[in-house]
Length: 244
Image 1 (spheres, helix red, strand yellow):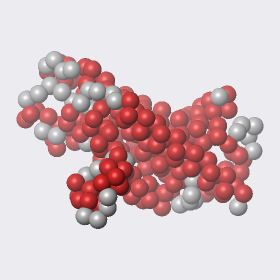
Image 2: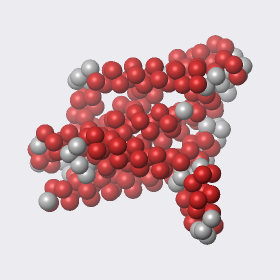
Image 3: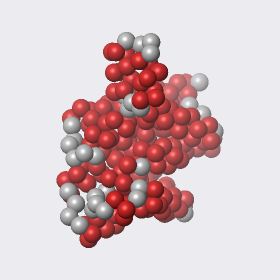
């Protein structure tokens, strides 16, 4: 755990060592505001809640999260600092977990800075705060899922652009796997068990269930298991690249 904390502290400090982190947060906050108040028809709905705000989170994360994760390992490999990183007196698992937790914490900070949205609906009406808290938790879990995927893909290449594009593609597949268009394709020839399995991987399905105000253990287990699986794959990829 000490090794994980050292890597976490190093990586998180690295985010704020340059203006890039601040620019990213500002763009993220500006974009969430545009999506909520304009595309989400916040005022036209006449309801004091944050459903329009959370509605677009999967699609915002689809672009913003790969932008964070693409540098996690690709930059280390490109600059040649990954060899130095691997020689530190910490385990490989600690490095993988520390990098991921730092990126997840940075995402959490950006998400936490959207609190004026919460204050706005509280001022305008009487929202269900339990639903809002559950939605924030679900959003953070979903962000962790996207990050774990992006981190693993970042470890496979030195090119950050390739890491970004492939991460967006893979995350998109996980996002829409429960959409009718995708399920109709499988329903035409696949057994019902396979169709249900494909639908169960949908980020939209699990996140939408949480935004209703009910944190189902199955949804939490899905995101936690997904993160664990991709981080394990991340560690394997790093080990293979190191051996090569």
